Image (cartoon, rainbow, N blue to C red; front, side, top):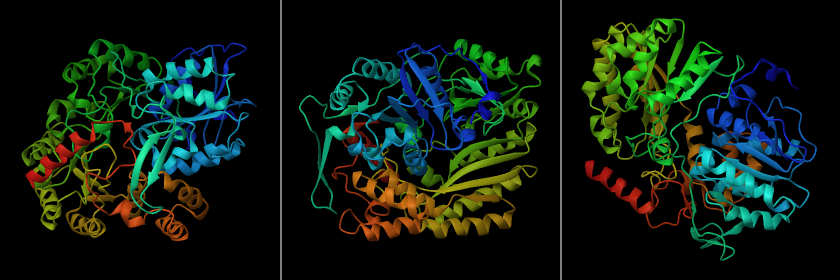
Length: 534
């Protein structure tokens, strides 16, 4: 099946592989339109395709390029936890055992990367031979070089050699012990003295960030060319995986951003500026001045979520002129107290000013990201969110307001990793839906049950792998997880222990041997500061 690939426009020159090139399949465990819209997936695929010592074929759930009969490497980019079921199905389609322990010399090495695996790979560890922790840019070269050098060695020798490379995590070379089959983790130790006790995330420190390597009308964002303007976020909201996992905050200079944008404008008129906090680029105003020039009048410009206090009338006017009718702002909560707890450096006056500027600049709508169930949240905090929207409606009466609202999920590598999900969160989602509906505010809640599953996978350990393998045959509802926990009772902790329980800070965490963010003692200090605020 090749038809989606014929619509692609490349922004790089693929190499012609050598006759003895490594045979690689690089997959995304979702549909083509979703996978090809992932900038991280594009970056890795193009890096592989540029090498003469690699012959790479792409694989999605609905389409693939011609695949090698005997691949040596099969890799996946995992951006969403629940895509693991698709990943296992793709392995089975390739006639590769899903369990690492069942693979032998004739099977390819299965590697993975992406934010899910960098944060906490342990629930999925038994499915992978190698996991790449951190940014792709510094990891791929040593990974591929080592694989090529050891390609004729026995499988165990290959894995041992790969474990010596910084940032490459080989799960089978670590033993996890427990106080009991359903008890806490007792320890995580390498199986051999030569295997590192702690695997350190690798960080890209170059002067450029990622940009699209392919543009296609079949992407989820049609014909968009994406440019990464910032990586990480300087704000460090205490729940935020995107901030803590991708530290340090990095920005390319405008001298590299403008040529990157110009490459995209040569093939499309739709530009997307990506990053957790795009408007905090130190030269953002200069970038907007560049894009305001008359020759770009037909360009459609999209900007990822922006920091509230950077929304000016001039920015709103430019976006309105460039085909954008709304802006998205993460406020998390209408409660000033709770924003201080989570380290959201944002005052209510700034939110109201952003709405005023958006309306004056000609935008039609503002979309907000919110959250319920944050640590220390009270009923009064949720009521404050309703009160904020009452004020917003009076402040900018011509704007349409939308609140997309999720439930707090404890994420590994963040200061709130020790907090469980609040059971009251579901009731608070229903409260907001009712009260905001009265105000004419569109409310888009994320599924509470899906958040519970995310929490399970975010805080999970290796004992979850057999459960995950069962669940995919039952369906992906929360009921399927409950059924599997019941069937495996006594072989792993209770569902409640993973999702709702607050964990003591001296607990051995499933990812204790993986340094993918700040050290645990630093995260604990950040959490302590949050409690002082409350």
